[in-house]
Length: 388
Image 1 (cartoon, rainbow, N blue to C red):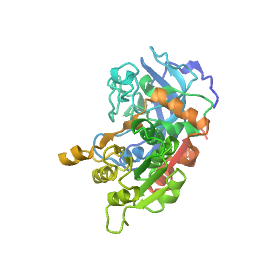
Image 2 (cartoon, one colour):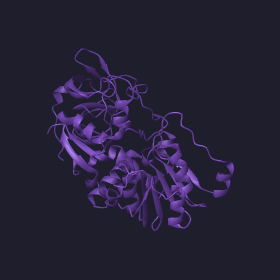
Image 3 (cartoon, rainbow, N blue to C red):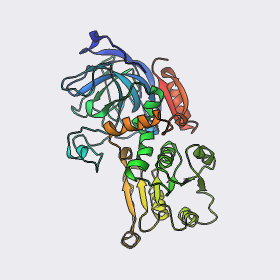
Image 4 (cartoon, helix red, strand yellow):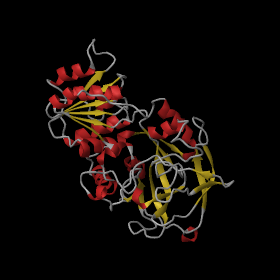
């Protein structure tokens, strides 16, 4: 990936480019020309090289009620080239290769300075339709109508504007169609095993849900040296896929011989898994994962996003007497600006395997086909090239 000297004549001026706009829930994205304003202070304008499709994009594409808003430019897994920078930007310069990320890392607040948290308190995570610092948009269609942002990234466009708290400069030697995966999904799963759970060598891991996130957890657990990785899913075909990512055992949750999944896992492991990861987003599955981890030191990590208002219920006896840990993990506990470069280096050093996550690649014009593939469960990650 080579740095490119972009023409400076467009710096400070609006750019016209193509974007795939979500104008109504569940309807095909519409590729049309838009204008992208120049970056304000602490912002950068980025030319997207490629973007990958995450299931969160599909979720918000289908969603009818707030925080869904229309029209909107979706997309949040990407890599690009800095076209221009606003005032007070010193981390990156024109021509730098950057990965935008949905979870802020301002590097200034108490949380960002601490090793204990990746939850920025200056820019708390929320699904906002605006730029995080100014609560305004940088996108308009050719009729002058405002187009809303998504997860502080909006990568389904040839150019986007991102706050500097949501951008990390990366090594231009990393292939862009692999580097873009670390904006969200793969980082979340790998990070949950590596940073949140701190999986130890020789331990047993159980993963509930073998979608992209669950498989990324398996990859992270494999790198951390887990000797037994148990995959749990309703689809038995997922076991064959899981083997590619280090899954050693499989539990078909719909066929447990009259036993609960937790009973099966406790019997398999002689007391429960050391680490359990819930990657689906179901309260009932969180309870099952918690029941599946070992008393005394077991950790259950919640990655799945359940519907709003969903509740978890545990008896005080259960919590007090079993001595287990239950915790959430947003973006895998990663600090984007320091941890994404580490993961990219581990990929280049052939420790982290990103290639097997990419099952499809296609042109920007075919973005709706990518949505179809993901909806039908036919792909893990589809990389969309903006200029091919």
